[in-house]
Amino acid sequence: MPAAANRSGIWPVLAFVGAGALCVAAGWWLGQLQNGSTGSDPSRAALERQASSLQQQLNQGEASQAEQQRLLELLVALDRKAEATALLERLADQQPQQWSLRLLLAELRRDQQDRSGAERELRQLLNLRPDQIEGLQLMALLQLEMGRGAQAQSQLEAALQRASKPQLKPEALPIGLLLANLLQRRGQPGQGESLLLKLATEFPSDQRPLLARAMLQQERGDIKGAQESLALARSRKTGPSDPRLDQVAAAWGLAPLRDPSPVTPEKQTPAALAESGNP
Image (cartoon, rainbow, N blue to C red; front, side, top):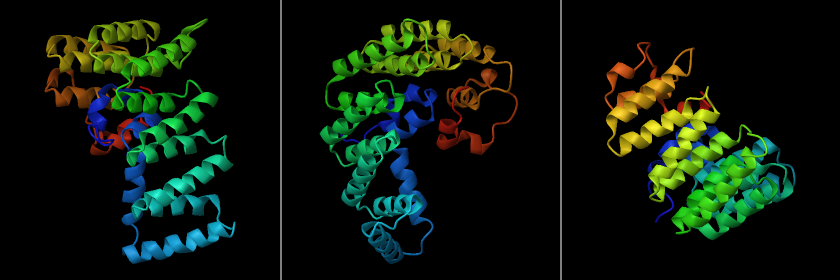
């Protein structure tokens, strides 16, 4: 399976896990770097000149963090991903405490079809932070792509166990959502839905388990069940409705479940949905 194939379709439930997880699996970071860079410069030649200048500063040890970030953006925008990978590898080795650099390096390797290299980077991250949700998500996606879904499931089950005992931790919710979606993708929707119901009980004020359940129900054609789950999700919050509820209801043509207050176009963008965080 190509690395870019069905990135959003593979993980429909993960829009509700959190910003970091969604951005990584969707390849959002690479797209943002490329779109942000090419739109601000008049020509490729200008980009090349700027990249050369920054590379020279880096080689001389004079590049600031902001300049290194800009060089990384330019290398991706210019499709010089091998050089971008080398730069990210250097930065990740120099700043091991910055786990996000290792995560971005894994995503960049995956984007270049280097799944084994991406997995190697993720193992370094997860050895230090075994329950890092963004790392777990990308690792599960990689393992599915490589036909190792059982291994992904075992790893997530172990992470959920750690987050649940001896006492329930907040991290159990995003890990559980990820595991529920993986179970569905592996042909075990019943187990996935049971886990979502368990999460809904354990986190009674959070809408996400019920939102995820509604999506699973709609996917299998249980529109009535999906309506009920969306209504229950809405009842869990006394303040303004989460715009994701309205987006899901609108996509399914469930007008009665939509909040009467308008949802602005800005709120409906994928980036805005990702950045909204916890309901």
